[in-house]
Image (cartoon, rainbow, N blue to C red):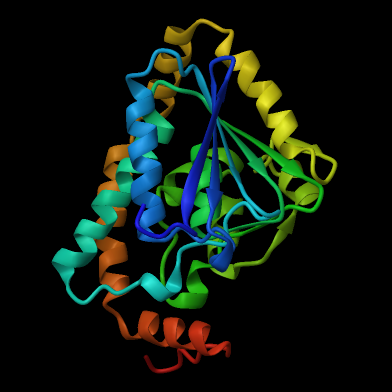
Length: 257
């Protein structure tokens, strides 16, 4: 990657590929260069038979703080559609690819970070983890497959509330509604997630791949719809206001926009 302070760190052991989002300046916000690097690694792993499971985590006590608002520069429809197409490659590999993925969540898991966690097959969270959709604060709808993956995890009613109100959930509440599969002490999420990934890596690979494929039915349609809807939101006045408010560290004023 061009920016040495922004990377996806890799480690391999016992058939498990551990990936760490590492962008300290933005609390591991999913900037476009970081998305490109994540896609490159995930795509290469699909054809690497030595990789049988993946763990995804974030550096510095934060899983992912969301999209990088400072880099959301969509000026026209073709640019927006292409941005979404490139990002959706990641979600297709995570949700429908052959390799099971376990998320290890410490600290905040917001917006695009929540989307990444929900694209994983298992979510392990530390007690200090916090989950929030939060897209509405910047005048956007949920994306990166979250309108597909979150209802599949917690049901459409609860997903609707998270989307509309943007309230934060702690790890215990997230576990109660099925957003999180296991809660562990602070600092222990990566070790616990790695243990689950090692178990998955020891299992028959084909049934896991086929199961993921079946459960991904409908993903392509959902992503194509999201691609067009989010592009429209990118070009709207409410996103312009939300982005300006975020960068100015003030509350947005969406009235009449």
